Amino acid sequence: MPLVFGLLVVLNAVFLAWQFFEQQNRGHNTVNIVDKQEGKKIDLLAERPDIAQNAKEVENVGIVDDSKQTTSSKDDRSCYRIGPLLDPDMARQIKATFEKGGFDVALSSSNSGGSKYLLYIPPVATIEKAESIAKELQKQGIDSSVVTESQMANAISLGTVADYDQAQAIKARVAELGYRADMKTTLVSRKEQWLLVNNVYSAGKTQIDRILAGSSGLDKEKVNCR
Image (cartoon, rainbow, N blue to C red; front, side, top):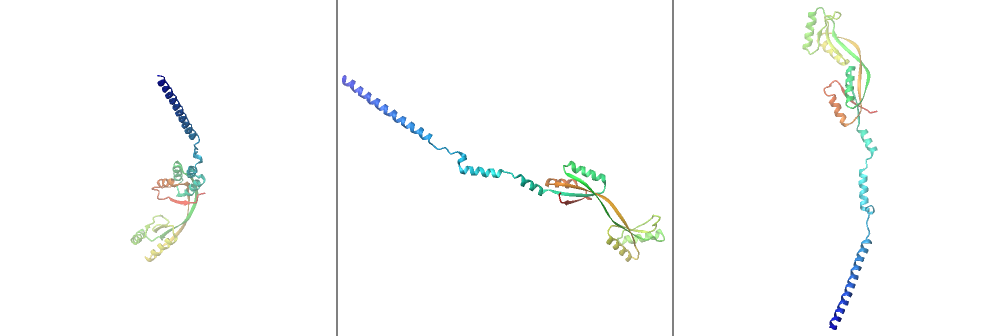
């Protein structure tokens, strides 16, 4: 019996010693793990040269140079001169139409003049003779008609032209047929108005063409923008 009790005491002492050393070993490993984690270096994103360089490139691409954009827009603009507008009411209506479309417009006036040449064969003895000559000229492709006004009765009108060389050519053709044609020169003056359309960009150019569609008597001239 005393032998058994002594054996139990020894076994118990051995167990306690083993348990003590096992706890010491576990505690030592845990401390090592914590120390290793606390000592690990953390890389900040701002300190990484590759990411910082990429961010700088993105920033540069995203920058819009307002001065360059403004210069490009100015280079794309155009200005136009539309006319001539001989009727003042028509000029005001067209101006109002462009203003409603959002255009920057203004009207300018100018006087233009030129010569007109009236061609005719002097009066003949009777109206029958005048009609006969007119028909002969018409067969040759010359525009002609009998004048019935008192001062020029029985004369044959050959029309009015604005070009001097054209007037001389008509006279020569009539002379070949055996008739003498005279010419009267008159000076003609007229007031013209022109619509100035400023700072027109690509979309506005198409809109102008739509507004002027069907207005064959109006010219659109590109002018320098002020």
